[in-house]
Amino acid sequence: MGDAPVMAIGKITRGRVVLDDTAPQVLVPYRDNADLIAHVARLGFLDGTVLDATYGLGTFWKDFKPDTLVTNDLYKPADHAWDFLDLPSRDGEFDAVVYDPDYKLNGTPALAEMDARYGVGEDMVNRQMRLDKMTVGAIECYRVARNFLLVKCMDMVEGGKIRWQTDLVTRAIEDVGGEKVARFMLHYVPIPQPPSWKATPLDATVKPKTFRSGNAEHAAREWVVEQGGGTVEQNRQITAASNYSSLLIFKRREFVRVRGKVAVGGILWPENDPEAAA
Image (cartoon, rainbow, N blue to C red; front, side, top):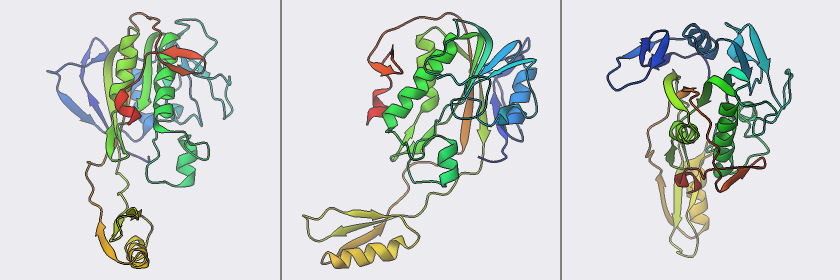
């Protein structure tokens, strides 16, 4: 998302950031994800052996690297090429696990390079499949974490609604025994929503059509004339732009195995947020 400041919400207690309603909100600027990770490490969340379950290009570790960092990625060079939905590691094998899933939901298409980076290119799956994968992966990464799980995700607008990924991941980890102890927010300048125009023909048998290209208004007016006339109006943005991503930190308390309806990677887990299926 580019260089950005980060908001750390919480208070420091004996070397740990603890969330509570009375804690002051402290705005601390960070250069990027690597700078944030270095700060998180100073708070003690990355002590010991660390698994980066979604290593990618390794950008998290440009400023700080644990003494023992185990890297994993199915598509980029790393120590291992494990499926993070079904890790071969034993329960609690790593002191901390970092998990940065492909949380970008495709709404208005972005640059091809960005879509590929976030795993939503040619092999795009639907929203529910992506959210299922995100939460099941978080649970599996929590399983192999001895002390802390760090999850990067984002509450984003898609399909005209805010998709609360932070709530979804938090509920999933709490359901298997984890406790959220910190949240860091990486702010950036949002990409403006491109203007779109809705053309509604007079002929009720023809469905209205939305145009989003660079010459959307002109294309909409031409199309509605071809349909025998009608109205053209600019669509109004109805949700606030999301301009932050979140780094959630969970403390390992226990691991509760629960069976449910969602099956991803051969593993059955509790059913995810029904709102996401809309």
